[in-house]
Length: 115
Image (cartoon, rainbow, N blue to C red):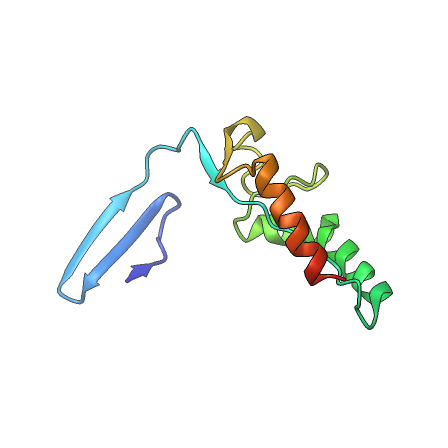
């Protein structure tokens, strides 16, 4: 079980009530793994305008600031979040960049799904 630390930079690990070990985090990583999230609107959506408004809200600065403050790294340029000072864009490594073949394959799948 991990408990909240009393001081910033510390993590309290409690594997059992009888054993406690205090660890201090002293360094940051040079690279961070990231995945890309997508938002799409189904072509057959009953309320496409509402879906567009929701998408605009979700991708807008206010919502992205909430995600950033929850620990997500966001690329919204006007949003200040807790990692913006510490993590630069060139430190982000995407888990997998899709190949041209992957993109074509997914494009066909999405075409079928969202017709």
